[in-house]
Image (tube, rainbow, N blue to C red):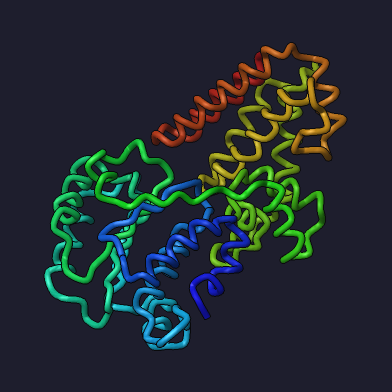
Length: 344
């Protein structure tokens, strides 16, 4: 089985046939760069492609690599290969530090144990701080023999120009929401409306869409996405409905409930983002909203607010996301946001 055939299902999910073809050509020609940079949106299969590439580079079959049956392919597939080195964001950390990069040096001081081509995979390389990037640069300038690096990144701007200049850059394109919806319906027999909402909520991230629906077997949350989504949207609609009986404390209650479960706050924020987006879209293209099952609520609330209010909510939401990412207090940040919705 060739690398093209091996990743056919992966390619169908990610719509990166040109990228896969480019990687295949590198393997077949035996022209493996010292460093590659896979960049693109989350959920576009960068990590999966890195492992397929490593298998193809080290497969012991005479033809059609990777075979996925030889000892090398099996070890890489199971994460047991001694010459596949991974660096990723440490638990509860926001950056990849210089100490993590320095650890690579010790591992690379000797020759590969058994691989023809040893791989060093640095995931989320755009989260390396400046010191870590400079440490990596020294390694890239004099790469060890029979070793190649693959860096994955969502953004290129945080990476030093000197890092970029030493990497062969390969872009991974996002899959359209329509394609994600079709994949979910085809592979998981999901209701069309549910698949549509999950695809639109997750944006161009297939893995996130599958996780929201508890279809990602590598990360099962046990959370019923539909129930959670319905609850969040109803609570939000109550806050912005401007009904006389709706107390200002309604927003504070929602803030408290969400902050008690920090691991799921960002999923709730993802849902809220679609609602605020729908408020802006509804006035001009009501048929294009994500949350079609709340059509009447959007119609009703749309009559109670001027359009500039919806734009303000979107700006406040963007600021709230920045605060959450920057380690601000979850409760205080959410209080500030929901109170802002309540007092308009």
